[in-house]
Image (cartoon, rainbow, N blue to C red):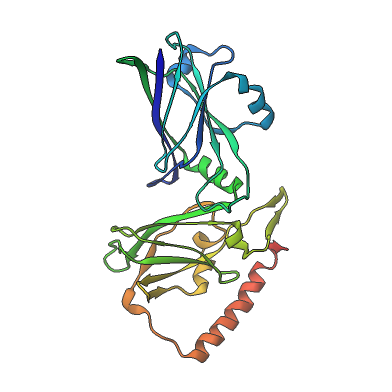
Length: 293
């Protein structure tokens, strides 16, 4: 008898933005031990609890089938067996290629997602079941942080009408070193997603934040520029990055950008130079207690 399990696994960046687990690996294991029937009826979700390398090795003999999710987080995994499955299966997800991750930075990490009994339906010569799950944003924020990757999402809107502005390029900058973190084009309704890694945050140097509980990665303070083609239509001052919602960004962040496209004016060269000098002095004083090299 043939079995086919299809579905989709994605993650919430914020309350209105989903990111598919593109190119992740899905692994299906035979059950181990006894499970409470009531719990199985609801599904036992672990919200991607990391599995140690030792535990991965220990359960390798129970591996039933595995496959790879496509760019949209869809998967299809099948296997052959001689009896109808009425017992629970374990589902694990392996992550490596998170969008924005620096290539070669980290190997595959396995997470346990669920132990459940699929609702099999007979279809010709096989049994088919479906599974879909969206990882909560708080869990996905922790996982992205573990991979030292960030994603900023939101919308570019006209400050007067609050309508989304499509077909413009959004560039995010790190206020500490004025380096470009990443960029993205907006959709028709003004939505954007910008991905970047620790390399872009640090400018190629390893920067860490020291806290009492240990060393943790520090998110950047950001400001934005918006372009229509090659024309700059909106440029925020670096002081914008000192707003609370712009400082030390979490790995999953939502930032809407309100712009007035007709408000960009050229400043005299001397004024701009003096402004940058003053801001750089303030910024260095603001950051010197946070970073070590």
